[in-house]
Length: 153
Image 1 (tube, helix red, strand yellow):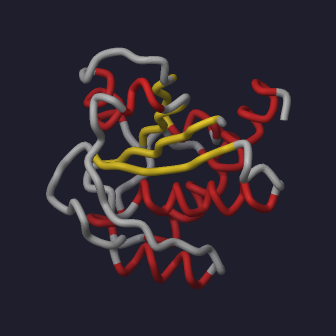
Image 2 (image 1 turned 90 degrees about the vertical axis):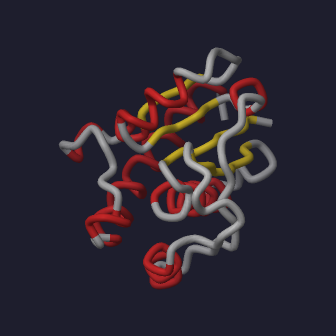
């Protein structure tokens, strides 16, 4: 089982959206028994809460299911996941500062360089959930292609 963890700041906007979109793409590719997906935040402000209403709204609009609850990343995640995928440079720095494990810690938009950005803007502050959805969808496609190639799926 290949395990992927998406990480943002509070785990209510970007990372749950990425988790939902990527999991949807994994199911569509028939790989749900091969790839497991989760998300977490570097902060603890929203632990136990559902995704932001804007995230839930854009996912529903695009027929992508999600019913997760926010959680904070834990040190053990570095050893329990194969990929920890961060939404921005601060998340990348925070996760990297937690230490080492077997997980490859990578920037999400490195899988969608054609989008012209290196960080997924936080819609909690920008309000632009549509832009976030477009970026997450493109990066999910790139990440899935990368995992399929790397693992021969």
